[in-house]
Image 1 (tube, helix red, strand yellow):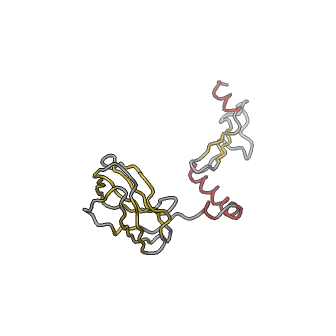
Image 2 (cartoon, helix red, strand yellow):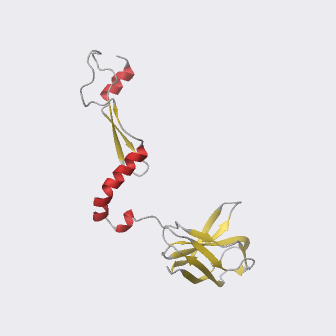
Image 3 (cartoon, one colour):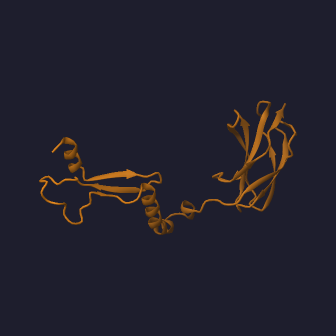
Length: 181
């Protein structure tokens, strides 16, 4: 018997963790018994795994979902946010002063509160969150908040993001604007 087969024979259980944190247990057995004369015993699997890790994870999470949801908070197994957010104000082409205030308006079909973030563009498509300028603004279908810009360096590439509070799963952004002194 070669060394690889011997190692596979000694390995009884391999555990692989899937991306969602569930565990998939795979039992390994040698493809040829030690004697080479007996077939594997009934019920012994050559490699006991069915489907791929994703299907095992879905099965495990759906089986655990009912009991885990009853014992943990409802937010742990909450449905993903649906709907959309559309920023309707401020109008493009207006510059703002650092530490100045102005109104931001939006349409929100998610039914969740929103946070408003100031971003600065750092590249063609990259940006960086600079500051949270309004938190937990209304959850109504239409909303408006007065935001005050923090003291930031003047520049032409700032914009606001209106996103669902906490996870930011649904969001929309304003056009870029300049911040002056």
